[in-house]
Length: 169
Length: 254
Image (cartoon, rainbow over all chains, first blue to last red; front, side, top):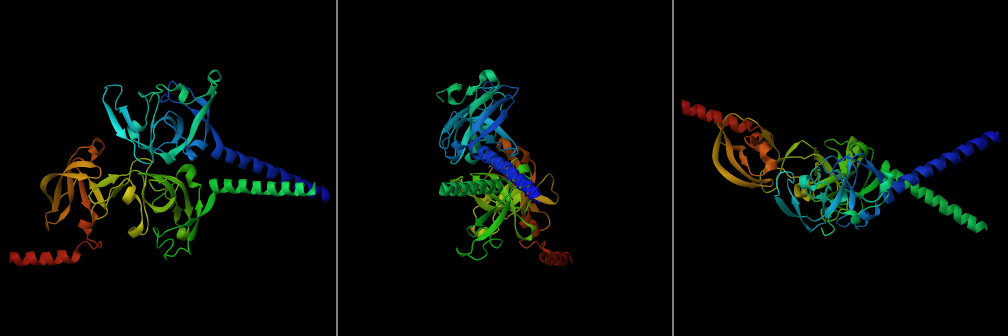
């Protein structure tokens, strides 16, 4: 009988440990840092076509520490089931000039970003669906700031404003 | 040594409890208080600060973003877009959702009811007559108490006609057109003509002759019929007035 009880107790302790571990994982993933996979042409040359593994921290959006030039993880305003990676180019109140159709013309437009919104663009402006298409994006859709590239191994290292195409932007 | 052990145990217990509680409230369900009277009479039917309603909010719907008309949702909003934080179930099998923060503060949450989903059409009562299609990834929310609710009517993708709901048609018969004019609507400048019923001559809506915004081009050549104008304010179809008019014209014929 006592052997049976000790087995039950042991099983309970192990279950509790696993549950604690999963909860800890959830906490770390939701509030601290997450891993993601970026693929597609919109962020060339920062992210490769085939899929790059990166780390994104979730503290900066929460505390309003985002700055233009950061690469961000953002929930797509067009299909809320998807999360996309883009570069942040303007905060509320900034005015942004962009090419409407860079492939065929040099026509540019300037907009002022309204309150509570940000402007995001892909690094590859020729093949990217971003704010030029759907306008400024609410700040609350920001999910994280990408700060470290994990895969491929030869590009392992921190990323962010330093490798921006135009640091004066 | 004993007190240290005890302290460690207590701290450990609280930490575990907090972690589990946070996970459950993030992923599965949580309880939120409802403040303010924007959802009266569903929540807070009496205006009193001491009797806030508390609602259970479920978050399973967030994994697939499955929402339907009439759900009450909790969300954080910013400007003209709405993102869902969660949906909850309340009384009467209604889903309860949380509304987004006010445009100026994206941390604040609101509770409102979903009126229209992506692809739906909705009219706006917002100082101009217009109909708008809800874009992908957006939805239209309104408080149950229209007198004191800040919602899509004031910040959303807005499409209400002057008299509430309106509908876009490809073809409308038995109408005559009025004079062409330029009209500034929420969605930009449009060239429109009013349309009138051939039977009674009353204004029932308008036709879009041209739209000056590229995104509104789909409206060109189509007709808006306002529900209020067709059915009457009480939805009675103007039955009584129609009858009196018919008898009047009969008398003229004789």
